[in-house]
Length: 442
Image (cartoon, rainbow, N blue to C red; front, side):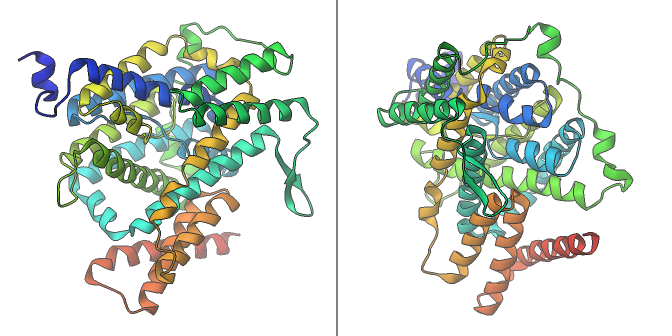
C-alpha cells in the first residue's frame, strides 16, 4: 500500500491518485477566479492589490493542505466571498476601521473560532439557528455581492430621488462589463470548466484590445508580494476608538464568526452529501478537524493579508469529477501555491472584467432559498427579512440581527418554544441591545 493510499484511504473510498489529481485541478479551475476578484474587492479598502493577490493564494493553499491532511475531505478553502465585501465596504469604508486593524480582527476571530470549536460551542450555535436562516443568509450575501458587482460595472448608479437607478449604458466601460457578463454566462451554460476565471481573463483582454481598459501593471517583486504580510494591528483591534472591547469590535467579530460558521456548515453538508461522506444520521465525520482547518486557514490569511477564509461550495465540482479524499484538496492547495508567484498580475485586471463575475457568483448563491418553507410564516418572515436587509442596508450584521430577532419573536407568538431555544433567545437579546445602543449613540 502506497503512502498516498495509507494517508488518504484511497482504496477504502473507491478512488485513485489519478482521479484525485484530476478532481483537485477541476476544483482549482472552478474557484481560481478568487485570485482575481479578492484583490479587486479588498483594494476598495486601500489594500495593495499585489499583496492581497499573493496572500489570497497563500491562504487558500495552506487552507487546502490543512483540510486535506488534517480532515481528509475533498473540500477547498479560500478567502470568502461576502466576508471580503463586508471587510472592505462595511468595516473599512463604512465604519472607518483601518484595514490593518480589520486584519487584526480577522486574526482574533480565527483564534476564537479555534477555541469555540475546541469547547464545542460552535456545535451548540449550529443547533440553535434554524436551517432556513442559514439559507437566507447565504442568499442575502449573494445579493450583497451581486449588488457590489452591478455597482462596480456601472449598471447601477446613485439617484437622489430613487436611491438607485440604471447607470450610463453609453459608457464604454459599462458596455464592456455587459459584454463580459454575456461571455461568462455563455461559458457557464456550456459548462466550461473554470468558466468564471476564463471569462474574467477574456473580458480583460477584450477591454485592453479595444482600449477600454488601461494596461498599467506594477512591478511585483518580493516587496510588492509581501506588502500586506504581517501588517495586521492586533492592539488596535483590541481597542477600537479607545473603548477596549466595545460594541464595534464585538459586532465585527460576531459577523466574522457567524457568517464563517454558517458558510461552512452549508458547504460541508452539500459537499459531504455529494461525496457520500455523510453518516446515515446526518452527522459529518471528523467535523471538528474540518473546523480546525478552517480556523487555522483564517489565522494564516490574516497574517498574510486577506480576509476570512471559508470552505468553498465550488469544491462540489471536484467531487463531481470523482474526488473523495483529502488528496483532492491537497492538489488544489498546491496549485494555489504555484500560482502565488504570478498572482500579483491580478492588479492589471480592470473592474469591468471582475464585476460580471461578482454578479454571477451572487446569482449562484440564490439556490439555498429553495430550502426555505415559504408557507410557514414563522420561518418565511425571518428568512425574508434576512434576505432583503443584508443588501439594502449594506450590512451582513443587520441581516443577521433582523432574522434572529424576528425568528425569536415569532417562535414565542406561535408557542413553538423549546428548551433548546435558550441560545437563540440569548442571541436575539444581544441583537436588540445592539440596536438600542445604535439608537442611543445615533
